[in-house]
Image 1 (cartoon, helix red, strand yellow):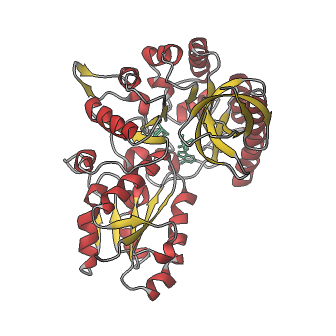
Image 2 (cartoon, rainbow, N blue to C red; image 1 turned 90 degrees about the vertical axis):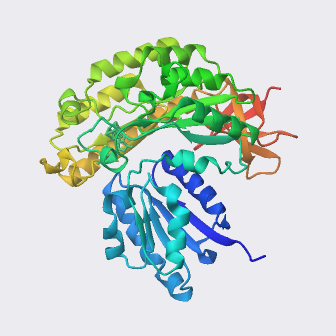
Image 3 (spheres, rainbow, N blue to C red; image 1 turned 60 degrees about the vertical axis):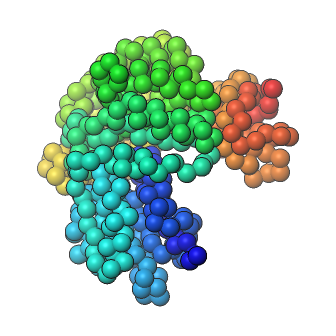
Length: 440
Ligand code: 5AD
Ligand code: SF4
């Protein structure tokens, strides 16, 4: 038997890409590929890319440039670009970087095996269609590989919101939800393979409206179905839009024990003028009221958010409104970005904020978010939390897992296994993680 070919996948950007990379690796497994952690011994290199900000897209080209030497040493090496840069730039990638053999968009990667064959015949392969057939169905025949205790599961893709800064509606297309029975089958399969925590993914996951036995289901209804799966202990979902936070989902945060007390709910900005120009269709006030309702259902909820500074026409006063909103809401984690012009989006045409000013605002915003994050992390000391253990720690006899609130927790304890879910008392708060001791 010939030695397996090696596939090196590098993933950029969001968690949906992490899920897609896993599925691509599984699809290529059927072609005799095994994954390698190093590009140096790979027979195929795939970059699963992100187009959300300019820097993310540029990184892909500089990374590709670095493979020149490898390809010169090993002419059989195939290099592919997948994900949103592939979707957005298509053939342009091959023009700009001729060493690329294959370009595949996020909706057509189930065709990767045929495409790889084509490249083996010395041809270039490009597919950025939004095909009729469902990639998940095509991939279904291939069981998910055995794995650790946590997994992502894509339930919804695409976005119809058209925020004025964002490329997602163009690269990932219109909102589509997967039927509930297929999600439940995939979830059961994951649990059989040792998964105890599933994070449901979608660009607008709380807009989920997949077909169920009695018509379309909401995300909350899907979560309640998942709740019935024995062996599945934790459910999370990301990422959500404030306008799709329906009553039954808010209620589930208070009543579904498997649904973790963590919510990523981006607001982007705190000024109503900017929110309007961003086409967000909510105000700062309506967002704050919404958070109050969610916290009434689940008082200990840890909130996470996304923020953009330096959006076109943002004044210092508008920026202050973002800081005020953060002070009021309080975030346990947050992702903040300087506005990045994306060609083809409405905001790209507008008057841009001075880059130095935007840098300064980003620094001030991050200082505030870091302080809040720190305070919330420190406030965990003395609390009892559930921890799902994922891997051994750096020190002897130590294991690391994630708390219900998604904080990394280090615990010393004989006999803790990967996949154990245990009660832990938090004893101290370090730079980026907590330390705890076992309660049971
Ligand atoms: N510039 C900066 N940040 C952006 N995001 C999306 N598009 C842009 C852009 N053009 C951020 C938003 C979104 C997150 C995934 O990325 O905050 O919620
Ligand atoms: Fe982009 Fe807005 Fe859709 Fe999120 S809701 S993916 S930011 S357009």
